[in-house]
Length: 395
Image (cartoon, rainbow, N blue to C red; front, side, top):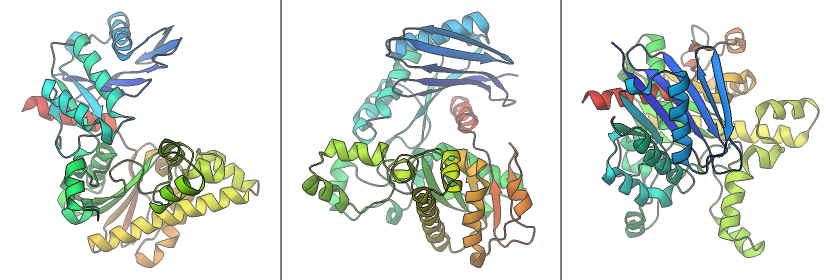
């Protein structure tokens, strides 16, 4: 039995793709299409140990996806064996709260929600349209980054703004990186050999984008990202939490336009704004060279993360597991150590040797007698998408 699923992640100028067999969870092919809409685009297609690359002009997502289909025809695996196509979709709002088969109504709803995710939903919709044209005879399923957090209680998702305005403009906390938090939290339970609904979990997704979640006996009850992915932790180029008054201050006193402030907080803030670099390897090198700005930047990063972990421990009424995932969380033992050292008084005992270990496998990095179990779990959003798509098409 084989159930190949094609998974697409469409950005404004790129498309990442994978084919995963949902039955045995093997990766059958991976690929990346870059520089869509530019003078010279590139597609890289990998099957097994072989990688095939072509450079050509792909003016839009439809042409790019047609090039992807050609790659599959020439180098395999056969797309006519694919049972469904899964689309990573950033924002489903409060209307699309579960993975769902895509039809014209779903696309219309995504278009209505685009003001909530203007950088993400429009290219995602373009990818959906192009893929439906390229592969019209299989179901297409939208998997939403926001869906995992549709369980947040009102006290967690409600902003203290006038109710009428919130309802009219769909203003609330939605949360993002939900596919990752879903996968990682379930993998924690599998790794420990316990029931998923028995745990109080905190998951720290620390990549260029960063978010943290509180999961109470299998139900997400809080998360750091909000109406948009800008809220919460300090990130590679995003500020995370700031006083909302900062926006008005910069507008009045510095003459910044709303668009300029938007660009500043999303693309020029965070670690790159504080340390002049967003890659933590570069930041570490700066600190070793005596760069005070980089040292302060890392201190701010750790402080904000501790702030949220402490808050979520209180909301959960204690915690069984704290898990690190994504690029920084999986690969930076220094950050993990600094966070856990500060949590020693709250029941965290880190094992230095386990923490220093390099591995692609889920693993416990706390001591055996630690009241709180600390783990590193490599995230796999594509695999989680394949599982959800398979469940949808199975009915």
